[in-house]
Image (cartoon, rainbow, N blue to C red; front, side, top):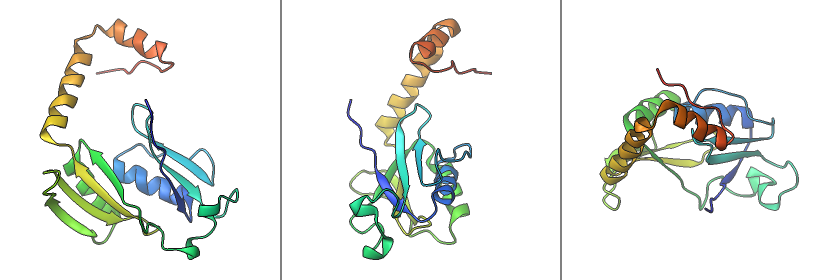
Length: 164
């Protein structure tokens, strides 16, 4: 499996980290470092990396004044909790950059907003097919005996999840 780690330059990593965690509905935690943080999905997949401008001399992360942050970049996230994401987004910004609508290409609902550094962020609902697939994956996990789920998590180096 190959994955992309998208890294964006930000002025204040802890502030942006908290903003994105709020947008994604994640538990608020501090980034690993004051100048770099990785936002992770519940399965450990990196969603987005935040890097403070001008730290470590990366040529394209020297200064936000050398270009408009986000020019040529669209941060596009697919979510399974679209309605909740929309409510969280409205609480984070005074006005959305693009109101909710159905994208004619993906045929899914989406909206856009600007993050604290001016990046354009689009949140899109999963398609009906993706939602059904996700629901069947969750149902299959529930069919496994509790002990098997615990062993599977341990073999991946994770703690087993407890369900009520």
